Length: 279
Image 1 (cartoon, one colour):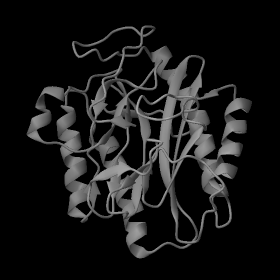
Image 2 (image 1 turned 30 degrees about the vertical axis):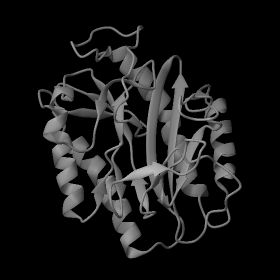
Image 3 (image 1 turned 180 degrees about the vertical axis):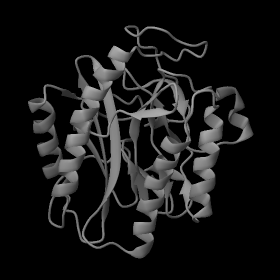
Image 4 (image 1 turned 90 degrees about the vertical axis):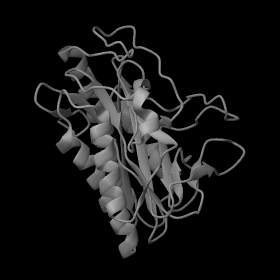
């Protein structure tokens, strides 16, 4: 995920492109991204199995780091520098608990019954990146918390079902926003998805909402475009802020719970190919 004002850099090893600096991928490159995405999928499945009351987010991260290394990959997030932060990101996973939206840092914090944890994982393998996230309930959660999880996952499913070559991204983003808001929840504005390939963050920015002020940032979906689509949804208002002076962990301003789901997707001639579903 990235801040809405971010500008990505091009991936010099990829072929093809658009006037927006969006780098199209060959089928070989798409399969390399899928291979990285397969490790991400395996890690997230393991995190779902592990996450339980009494388990720490550091426990989750330790297992993820070993799985990534054993798979021949490198952790995409570890060591990433944020110009606003006081230190590079220290872990393989972002583990964001409850009101934490993104960039949660693994620690000795124990998960508790009724918590939710959004686990975001990125892997680089053979020079290409895969990125995916999901929000995991810890034990029994409240009805409104489960609704938040279901709607956020549903927004991602809606994007996958909607995407067709030739569409403008704004049409997809608008439908995602309308769906979320019809469920009395809020779509985060400050952080959005992104292109992905040799670099974790490439053009274009991929928002989960739309308004007319963004028209100049719109783009047309074309085959061989690869995007990390990641709806982020809040139980309360859409506003977020940094939790502390380290400038990493982002929380909801009203401290209501937040959820996050993400897939890496390749646009095809007829629709979309999910590259982080384990195939």
